[in-house]
Image (cartoon, rainbow, N blue to C red; front, side, top):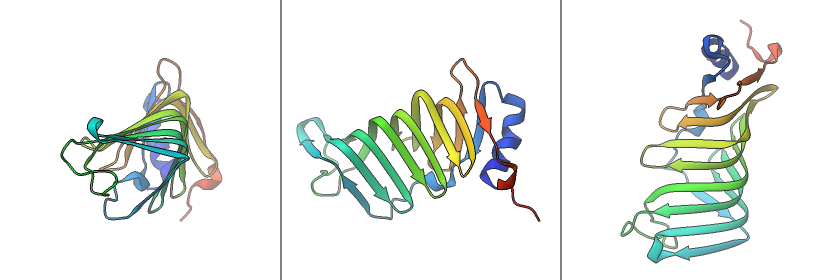
Amino acid sequence: MPFAVALVAAAAPALAQQTNSRMSGLKLSNDQPIQIESDKLEIKDPESKAIFTGNVKVVQGATTLQAGNMVVYYKAGGGSISGGNAQIDRIEVDRKVFLQSGTQQATADSGQFNMAQQTLVLKGKQVVLSEGKNVFTGCQLNVSMATGEAQLEACGGRVQIQLDPKSQKTN
C-alpha cells in the first residue's frame, strides 16, 4: 500500500491527535556498512560513548541521517567504536535532524534511536514527515524500525496533513 494511501486510511478517525503510517525504509539493515562523517569525534571508552560534533552525516544503504551532533552510547564490554565492533545501545541526535530513507524524509529538532527496542523517536516544535508532495506535520514521530510502523503525534495540538491527489497510484 503506498505511503499516502496507508496514512490517509489510518488517519481519518484520529486526524486531530495522531496518525499512523509505514516508513518501510527505516527498517534496520544491520548487514550493510555504515559511513559516518563529522567535524569532530571524541571517543570516551570509560563512559561507553562516542560524541560526533558538527555537520554529522550517517549513511547506511538507502538511509541518510544528518544532525548537528550525535552521541552513540554502546554497551560496556561489548566492543569499541574504534574497533568497529561496538554493541550500540542507543543513539541521540540534535540540532537540525534530517532523516531520509528512500522517498521519505523527516525533519526534527532532536531524535533518539533505541537499538534494544528497535525504536526511533523524533521530536521538535515541528516534526515534518514527507513523501513527494505529501506532507505530515506534528511534534513527535515514533517509528518501529523492526516493522516500519510509524505514528505522528500532535502533542496537544493537531496533526496537519497535506496530500497531493496526483501521488496516488491508479489502476
